[in-house]
Length: 184
Image (cartoon, rainbow, N blue to C red):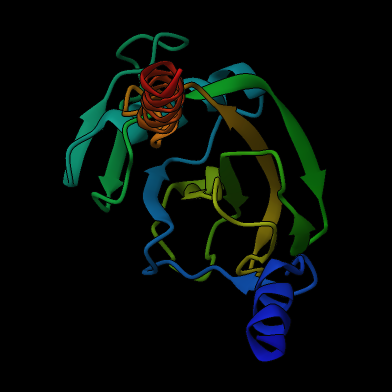
């Protein structure tokens, strides 16, 4: 019994100190966006949401902030949950290790010739990850200019069992009172 208690205690300890190293091919990777411009968070949010909604593979996206002048190339991994990012975003410069608790998405801006060397001219490229289940991360830092963290919307999925648990508790209470009533 004591061993089970110790195991449960160990499993409940926070793992915030353990950083996950993100890569371009891991299950957190959402994909890339070329070219890596503009610099405003509102425009990055639009590009990130286009990548989240994109089917796996390469596609073209015409951003609303520049019309059809410069289409963006989206290369989506297919790892997206489909839950769109929300703003306003939190900017970070010069860090490659960071606490991402409370955020859902990270979009990093890499200069020309970054680790993936996706082109993009002087604008470089963006790469995005889903960090909703992570607490501390290390991101690839070769040619990293900056990154922005965004929250996420509410997924349209089941409630995780809360309704079933409440229904079960209500049924147990009803059976308890019914049994008491029979005995009286």
